[in-house]
Length: 170
Image (cartoon, rainbow, N blue to C red; front, top):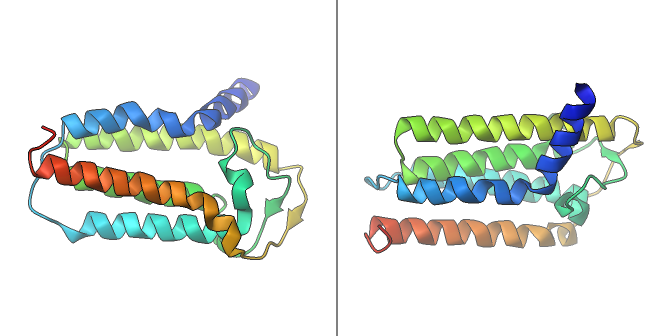
């Protein structure tokens, strides 16, 4: 059973970026634009900061479709959070859900699915990391290059939200 969970987590890891797409489409469809609230933007910003901080230590291997870091980083954000990129993702998803303001049941569903998917990914990745050498890494700005795509996705999401609020998309 444990081996099945590990394999399923690896599969989810491979397609983690695409898993969110149908939920985002439903989020747009089920959104209920309300008054402007700064809290979702703040939460999204926290998520981006955490991701940039973590990416600066782990680099482009974190963007692969399979586990390939080759080491277990144990300092900086990885000293405090075992999987800081995923914590950053949690804040991004939470902020986007709050921004689009869907029915509570759908917002809860999105967060539960996120937690379930990433719990399985974390279990699988932890299995991969357990036998790797533990090392301290140094922050390198060049390692953050991959986070440009995360930032672009967030800008697109915010643009779609703007279009929803202006009743252009809905």
